[in-house]
Amino acid sequence: MVCGLHPDFGYVDQPPGVPLLAATLYATGLGAWGLRVPVAMAAAALVWIAARLARTLGGGTWAVGLTGLACAIAPMLMGLAATLNTSVFDPLAWTAIAWLLVRGLREGDDRALVLAGVVAGVALEIKYSVAFWMAGLALGLLVTPQRILLRRRGLWIGLALAAVIALPSALWQWRHGFLFLELTAAARDKNVAVGAWSFLHNQIRVMNPLFTPLWLAGLVAPLIVRRLRDLRFIAIACVVVVVIVRAGHGKDYYLSPLYPTLFAIGAAALEPLTRPLAGRLVTCAGAALAVMLSAIAAPVALPILSPAALARYMTRLHIAPQQQERSFRGTVLPQVFADQLGWHDFTREVETAWAQIPAGDRPATGIKVDNYGEAAALDLYGHALPPALSGHNQYFLWGLRGQHPTDLLVVQHDLDALRPYCRETLVLGTTSSLWAMAVENGKIIALCRGVTPPIRTLWPHLKIYE
Image 1 (cartoon, rainbow, N blue to C red):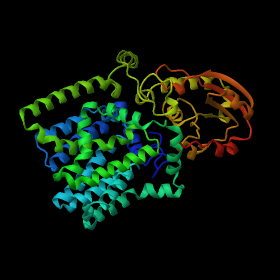
Image 2: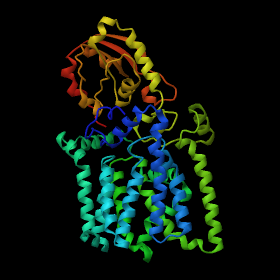
Image 3: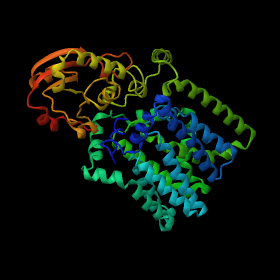
């Protein structure tokens, strides 16, 4: 939201699409409800698009139904739809691109190829990761007979439109030295390196174990089922994306955009098994069990329970979310919730400390915090506070934000690391919020008087891209 309130063609850690949307919705005053409207629409559209893909692949009622069910209740896909974020639109965009390419291939529809390019361009203005999908699909086409698509005029028109739509953000990155690549490289240290088997086990769990046959069939069927062999380029693209994500220590949800397409292909491949009565009974039983499993997982993915009730629920069921970031250690709730909580407490604690600074000293005092979450909380929720300062991601580029402070109110863990830069340090408070990320608790709120060297000199050394 704070990025969107500073409109630009790009930001250090994201294209402009979601920030501008978030800021616009924030301005309506509808609160969290308003922010979730486009998310709900994207989740519903995903079910429809994936079902259309299954139908385009020759699937009947059973294939369409299984595809829609899996896309609607897979726990990871539900979790992505819990907040307005850059990742929530990826499953919809990636699945739409796959569907439109299949239509262009099987139906000779050049308009579908052009539209695939438009979708890709819009997706690039939302999250850069769609470039991995595009690269995988390009490689898949090059090494399979489906390379005939590369001769189609509609495909190249679509790619040209994608380039035009994505150009503003690309130019912004170019002008700033492609900061997103620097940030991506730094993320390898931020994210936990999860072993291959643990990563696979977690994928099975978060996508609902009973849907495993669907996505596995979607990955394998193009290699062995004659009527689906023209989809080998999609299977290859999926493998390419997995390799890229694993090489970059990506989080589990980075692969979530692949699954709706695999669900559709898998459902179309397995549908003949539903023709006998026994097959239908087994499918119905499996679907019912899948609904039950997803219902059990739903409180961990969606904001259904209060934090206290969720903590008890997870303890009772022995559910422990996989650690995705090093900073997650010690956090009670899943990160999708913990990262949303505690910000009002944090702001009040900083405001209390700020009130202890003599009024005459405040014009020469800035507030410096560790990360963009803290800075944004102060910017959005704070009263009578100066614009927050941080070296984290986009806040680093914004610099001192028109301020020239000689003193700083600093929020950080290590007081001893602060003292060499201050003529005098005075602890004014600490941070604490029960359900927040553990890393946000126990920080000192200290007044650093007489910053030395001046903050303007120190600023280039405060950069944190991750």
